[in-house]
Length: 432
Ligand code: SAH
Ligand code: SF4
Ligand code: F3S
Image (cartoon, rainbow, N blue to C red; front, side):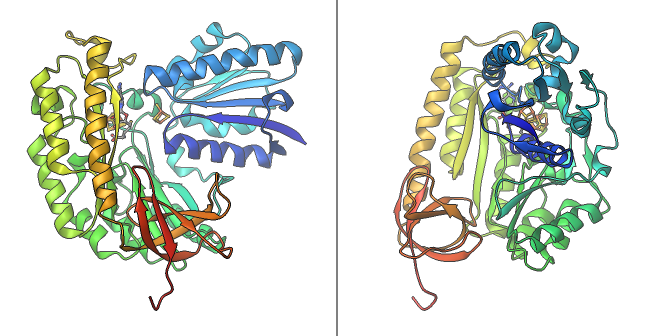
């Protein structure tokens, strides 16, 4: 049997691409190994969203040079967004790389045995029409692609250049995949797309949710990521009405300043965003809302940064991902005048994160004593006497148990203590 070592960075989409590439490689007789020195194929699935992500990959890649020196037969393949962005250039920079495979060409991974090397970065407008096998890590919760690419060209973002234009998967193939997953015992699906709510298959995105909600055996439906500009009442109502759709939305705000939002090409104002939050909270009582924020976008003034701080206080998100602005090749924001010095970006990020830490903790504390439905994903990695799972609102819960409970069980859990990044709980019987 041939052996593959795979390492993945980046978003859920990229992790799922790795599951798909493993699925393809398994069909070719490959088995996954944990040690790159044992591998016949070393596959890096990379992310270029921020400079730091890129640096991490290059330092890891550097290490494989020695492996190749010792074992000249090992093949090294670089997939994902850095592969697409750099193309041929990657092989010039690291001549020991054999294959460069962009995200639209992951099917080519099945062919790597047939060639000595190659660069596969051409556009693939039929990506959404191909059904690919997958080796999934979790037996309970599964990622399912519903669309690929992005047409939005936010001025800071490299994704439209690495993932190409939007393509929606046909409804039938999405439904078929989810039906098969539920037959295998999966309880939860997370629908994936850079912009799931601009899904444009035979039905709209809320229409797709309605169809998936009918699938027997499925318990929960999640989706990432939503763009505020495409979020309408129909989606808010679908989340509220459909019993399987979980009460959580990740809705990236990026900034609380209208001038910065305009410079970012986000196509909404802060007031528009606030209106969507109101609509969601009205249609879906108890909905958890999480977001992304960029600190220190070019030309951002101290006052505009404070607008973001005010927004966090006003909206009270359940959680955020915040990042320092990082200039990316090909993007307009990287070329703008008024780039802020690193210490300013770092300082603003720190302020954002420490404020949100307080808010997240306060929101989690409010859950102490409540009873939550938790989908058990498995035992806790650091303590085998605990199970771990998530609430419908996507909060991680660690549960003390006396008896083993299989992964995939829906459990009623009383929250005993809240922390910043997780909750503790105990099971309650249905009569409690
Ligand atoms: N498609 C998703 C997000 C994809 S990238 C969406 O539109 O919401 C995930 C997050 O990374 C973005 O929401 C943004 O906050 C951050 N990000 C993207 N490019 C960045 C950059 N150049 N510098 C800093 N953060 C960035
Ligand atoms: Fe990037 Fe904007 Fe597209 Fe999200 S919507 S992937 S931030 S360009
Ligand atoms: Fe990274 Fe590409 Fe995802 S840049 S965040 S792996 S779309």
